[in-house]
Length: 68
Image 1 (cartoon, rainbow, N blue to C red):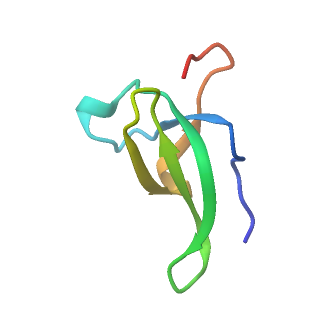
Image 2 (image 1 turned 180 degrees about the horizontal axis):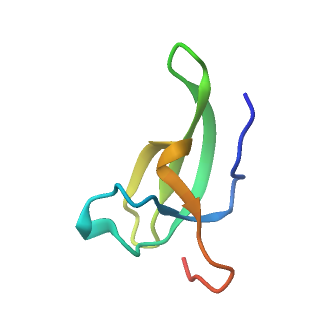
């Protein structure tokens, strides 16, 4: 399982995300293999405590100046 992102990294959802989540910054909390192909899945969390599990292709790195 090759992971693109690492625990503690700030990320944003890719362009396909729902409008209410655009621009929100998340922190990668955990990485684990998912599905039959064992591709990386990420548990991400906002500063307000909202969390979700997403696939690698649904994420992009946040800018270096992003705040969690």
